[in-house]
Image (tube, rainbow, N blue to C red; front, side, top):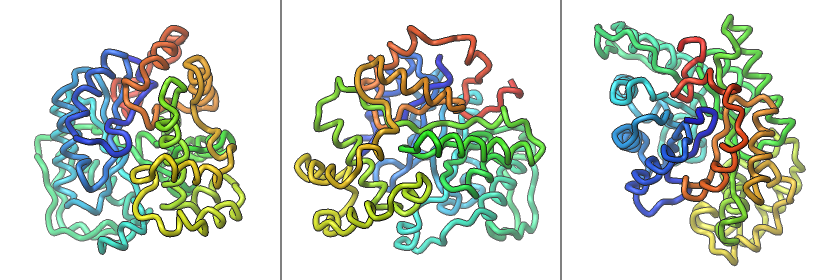
Length: 361
């Protein structure tokens, strides 16, 4: 298994969660080492999907990227992680993220703060070691008693989906792996990696044990043009809809471009996510609003060109690359090409878990 590679199961808006069964089987046949699971509150609830992936796989590492700590009671989340850990023989990593403020506001959930996540990580570590936590009062919340099983003495790796500098530093300080955002420029990627690794070192940890994953849009030219449009322009447009200011600020892009995008009549009146609900004609209109260099941080073109772009992410310092936005069927010619030129010795230290620290194996 190529443990430096991963994919997201059920990319975009799937017709059925059962699609993951063949996706995971195909990924294992190709040798893709890890399966990441995103969460949408429709037919992509993360705990259910995690169990399904664990049940139909034998080798592949599994991580949520991401669920949120405030949508479940901590005992429920802890039990979910420990169940997955034992179900998969240690191939699972619980992955958390901050979530989207706009969605939390709509659902009546509090916006997540850095201190809450750090507190919650400590709770998970203690529960999985078998501790009974009495009278916890901290940023994540207050509970009279928290307990899973006093017989536990487990290390279940934790993954964090990070964007801004505070999140990246938190990832290096207390998590085992960090997933970067899609469409990061080279400069942003390098800066993010340095932030994670430096924070790990300052916390007295081995920076090599905190694995940084590039989330890298991978859209080969063997796909139909309308599919490529959806997975590039549509995906970027959806990010700009949800948190465009953060994308622009992080990459040092021109905020006036974002302003023009938001003020466009089509975007202004559009209901839902553009990558999910936009027609080909609509996405072609939106394409004129997004500069080509904003979409350049992706693997596109022939399989050889895609592989060169993937290797470039590794050369920038990423420990792994999530081939984002495509199913294993879509990725097959690219992964086959990658495997033929792969330096096996470069990645033999990576465990079959996307967040397990290499030094612990």
